Structure formats: structure tokens, C-alpha cells
Length: 84
Image 1 (cartoon, helix red, strand yellow):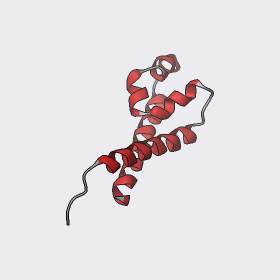
Image 2: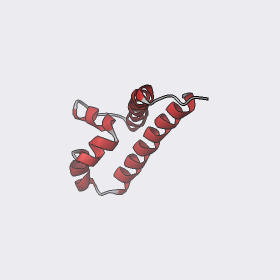
Image 3: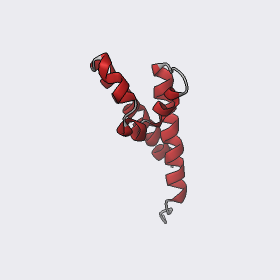
Image 4: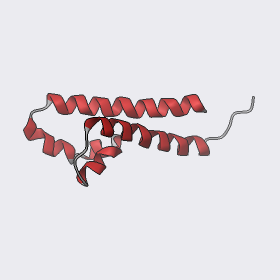
């Protein structure tokens, strides 16, 4: 279970890194519309905290990893255990 939770957290970090790199490649005029995009809010829930105040990129990446870890913990708790 620890390995699966680690994979959930790693997936959250990778998704956040991808969104960060995409935001670096886009021109500034698209940043406002990208920040309010539904797909960003679903795949990177830490972006919703940016509406409260400014957020550093490294906190965004770490918070997204934590959110995915908590989501993975919830999914794994309700997942039936395999008999060995």
C-alpha cells in the first residue's frame, strides 16, 4: 500500500510539473484563462488555492502531490484487499 500511495503522490507531482511547464511556455495573455480553466482545477486542485493569494511554483507542486496523496489514501482505503 505504501508503494501505491507513493505512486499517487508522484503522479500529483508530475501533473503539477507539467502544468508549471505549460504555463512557462504560454504567452502571458493566456495565463489568466488557464488559471480559471476547469481542466486545471480538476487535475491540479492546488491551483484553487492560488485564488486566495499568490503561490510560489514549488508550493504549488508540493501541495498538488499532497492532494493526490490524500485522494489516493481515500481510494486505497475503500479498495478491497486482495487475499494472499
